[in-house]
Image 1 (tube, one colour):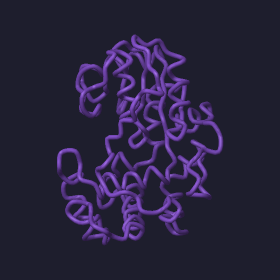
Image 2: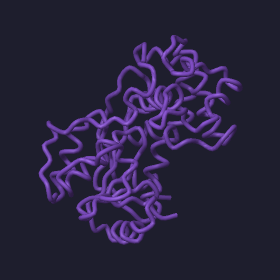
Image 3: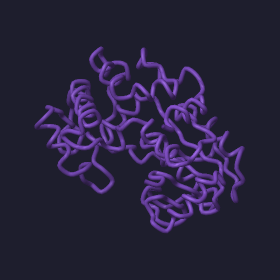
Amino acid sequence: MGFPGTWMTESESVVYRVVPKCACSTIGQIMFYSDHGTFFDGDIHDATTGLHKWALEPSQALIENNVKSHKSYAFTCVRNPYTRILSSFFDKICGIQRNGKRYRGNLVPLLTQKYGIEVGGDDGKQEFDQIASFRRFLLFARDTIRFKKPMEPDIHWSAMSGHVSTFIVNGGRYDNIFFTEKFDEGMASVLKNIKTKHTIDLKRIPKFNESEGHGPKRAHPVEDYFDDLSKHLVWEIYKRDFQLFKYDFENPGNKMPLAEVDLDEVHAKLGD
């Protein structure tokens, strides 16, 4: 299995396990900058040089050797499950992707037909009932995760604990798991523990948001999208994420974590 979703600087100063929809574009660009003194020109997910990635075959042995011997500082970043699944809906389902097409081709027509989801028309810019459509999408996301129907779950809405666990199960250990909601503080705690070729001033780093502008703007507060049934579905899908990463399940309007992540607990519970 190896270390899917794992990125490492070419200098091997730091190792990062990508969790989709959790500031991964900004983190990747900071890693790239730390080695090269410039940002990658384009979406960091498209970079095939300047950063080691598990998806690039020449990088795999280097990443595996590093992670298994815990040679470098290793970290990941997590996000409130309520805002993460909402972001996935507006970006991946309602939005037009950077290639000018819908995400995963026939996915949106399938959702319209089987779940009655609206996405704001062909360009994603028309008015539609965001709350009703999101709740139907949530049902679809649950079906993919629990029953693998009508398709396998997508990385953008599968549980964070699943992404985080592959790194542990295959022999890695995290030194730090921080929160998207406290990004500057968390990223600073990583940078304090590693040596970089180029100094990074977090106050001057732009936020690289690959999903910015893809889809319609969220028209309501987060809590309005989640009624009792929606909360039940969210718990069914993300129970472990709430428990391990200390987010507030009871109040969807509170995006902030309730406590710091207990790294020993994460390794114990996700390492089996």
